Length: 144
Image 1 (cartoon, one colour):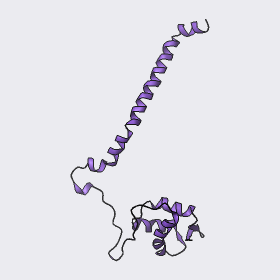
Image 2: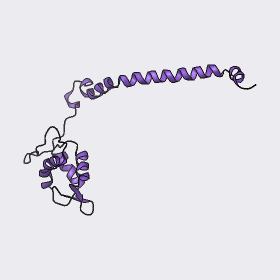
Image 3: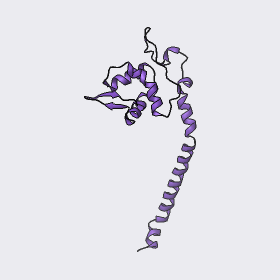
Image 4: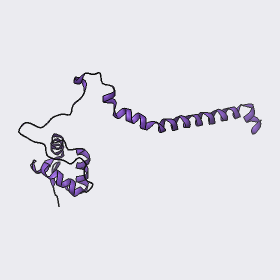
């Protein structure tokens, strides 16, 4: 027995229909999940305020790293797209470090001054050639 007769005898048509049904049902479920993903992400962003126990001690607070004798360096609310403008914002931070400095020192200083996204900004400064390798894992500041 060969061909369509063998498929019919082995219940191949029912298996094919079941397979198509499973695939389409899975695609429908996936499309529903993707269409509702924005709702899940909104809940995820608000999770700290939605699921509080009412105890203020359980709410994490931002670390205060500035001491009484030091002040935080100013940083704009929105980081500019121009890398030279970003370098101008980071220049006072670099002035506090002894050249050549390590990226860890720069990151710690940026975190202490609450600069947003220090990893990304340091990476952009390196790609632009503003932070250049000096020697032994240290870097120098070459702002134009």
